Image (cartoon, rainbow, N blue to C red; front, side, top):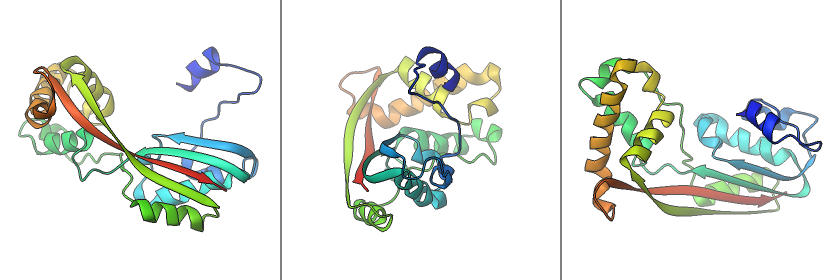
Length: 201
């Protein structure tokens, strides 16, 4: 992804760097250097214990008066498709054998709105707002299978010759859990909840 960006979106005022999001606040070249900082759908790849430190590091990169915008998927009590699919696969008679011991690297944001705002205040933010945005996402069989193929970390553990059967099973499972909300047959309807966090240093 970075290689493509460097090639297709190069500019004299853009630098692409690869690093650990947990360490951004420790970089002396970045502390207090940015007017604006954005982080879209990154924090859920950070373990729960490190999420506050990562958010604090993002705040530390801002100049006084600088603004930050963070969007992260919310923990919806295991009802979101990837989390529910992980559980289905783990407990499946056939597929569960291939994924024994696998733990998902996804950690949906589980802080409450007031706790998130308070956390940002303790990090030195002069203002912070936080809200949950809900969106309905309608997906066809092809879209659902593509999404699951790319988002499930278990996929490489399933033998390649079984991938189509695996995705067919997941589609049938998804239809049984999510199609009742879809406006027409052949689609599933997901309720996506994201936390939108805006703050000023």
